[in-house]
Amino acid sequence: MDFIKKITQTNLFKITSLNSLSIVLKLGIGLITSKVIAVFVGPSGLALVGNFRNFVGSFETISTLGFQNGIIKYVSESREEESDLNKFVSTVFISVLSVSVCLSGLLFFGADYWNTLIFGSQFQFSFVFKAFAFALPWYALSLILVSVINGLGKFKNVVYIAIIGNLIGLIVSVLFISQYQTIGALLAIIITPSVLFLVSFYFVSKEISIFNSVRLRFFDFKIISNLSHYFLMALVPGIIGSIVFLSIRKNIITIVGIQEAGYWEAISRISSYYLLFISSILTLYFLPNLAVAKNNQETKIVFWKYYKAIFPFIVIGLLLIYFTRLWIVKLLFTEAFLPVTSLFFWQLVGDMLKMAAWILGYQFFAKKLTVAFIVSELFSLLITYFSSIFLVKTFGIEGVVMAHALTYSIYLLVLSLYFRRSLF
Image (cartoon, rainbow, N blue to C red; front, side, top):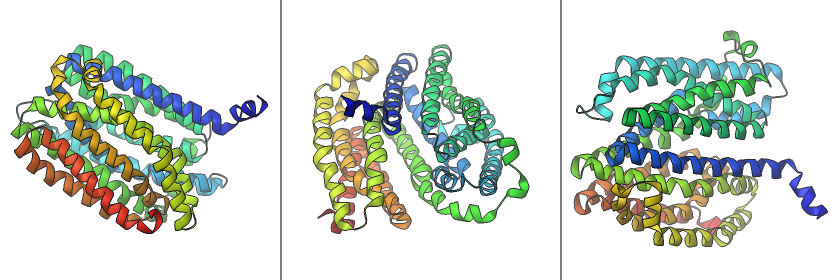
């Protein structure tokens, strides 16, 4: 009992438990939000929400310059040196604010163009892009502030911000979607992160004075240069990935229909819920172990620990999901979404292969293999795009999940060959 008590009193246990609570809360809120969208918006509205999420994701990456992981690293290294910390925080804030304001101008004055590009001329949602223009700078700065807090080692505060953000997101989503349907769902995507700026600012101001730290004279181009490779690593999944998935969804709408595009968005949401658990385990436990592995033999031990201890449960979990797919769709959505059940098999096969490849892909981050990461991501995105275009024409909406399975079968094979010395 004393041993258990000692464990439960450690900071690591408390932080991990709090993070687990945050993930469970995020999952629960995601389930509720999905149900609300299904009831008030339907499959066609869900397809439009998916389009806008991809668009917002690409602008988020550009506005923050993909600096989040770099900020965590450099703030943690310079937090004891006030002058270095001021220089770093000033450089990042000025850079991100400048970029996000420029992007806001493009959003506001090109609202009609973006509306036609993302939704099509039959929808008039230009107002949403103008609202996003005002929200974007706050959105970007809130992400930067969270990274600063993380770099300062205030992990509990990061989790608290995530919990508060999820709760705000739930309230905003339910109110806006129930009142304004599709437009409400689109506005909820951009309002929550911008409101979160105030929460993030409150927690940061308890540690450092932002008003005193951010000065133009502290700006240093060398810091931007040092952070540039983080932007490159964020560029492919954050910008190019969003564009690829947006293009795939628009292709589905054109060839099969907007309802079917909504079905794909629904299965993608279901997938994201269980993938969240595995990604958190990989980030919290396996990534640090890969980072400290000194040779191929130590890396091999980490790889196979994942395959022996975690992967069998993944397979069992996916089988349970497949056999309860009808109940899951009814719980999360409405009967209008029942055709989604036909997409489960190939989606689950693809996700199983994806989670098998994930542990190998994390080696790119652990060993800072920037070029290899970018090449592998571009390769997988190209396969996803062209295979989905071909298979959707041949098999209809099922073709897009077939393409998902094909992509990750090839991706797993390629990474297994690339890391064969560490794997076998």
